[in-house]
Image (cartoon, rainbow, N blue to C red; front, side, top):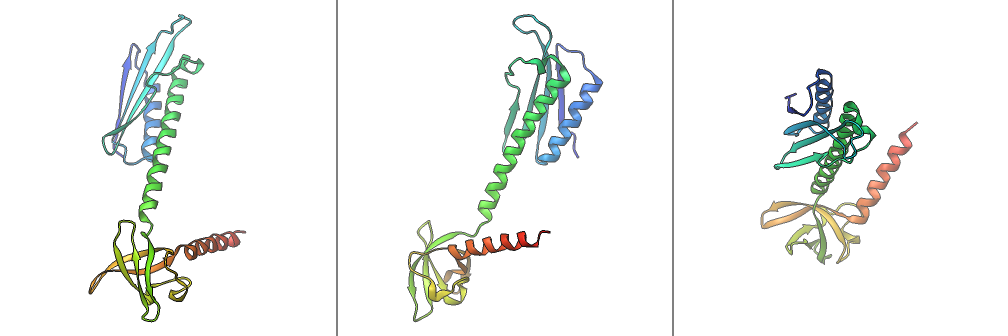
Length: 201
């Protein structure tokens, strides 16, 4: 695993023990999000307004694809956790981990959404001839044959019904294959989950 961590010390003597802690926690973050491009950690000693003792600030900047950055500790509120450098490091990396986990969840959700087959609405059906047409959200009309309909089957498909489908290129242009009425798809998903639950001890 490539070392991405850069550490800066401001008004503070470097500590090998703290540096080792920072690098260990940064490596864990990199395992969580393998596409991290950088991790810059700034450790700073600052004096609180009321001069009651030392306070430490830890700022973490994490580079992620797309030129974006996640920043932790931009203007941290002074608290007891910041009176100890190790505690401040732990608090900052806990927040960084939460931000990365949120980002990973959002990315996973987008990937799953993109991986679903496209949706369409049944525009026309020619029952006696065994074919029909779908209308996609972008206004295209796509041909489908009765043999491409899964689930309840072509005979039970109605105009206006929502479906998912796979698109392929036929001899006369785009056509739909694996047309699945959405109600049938949901029933199948529920049945799969129920079967998985029944298999558990």
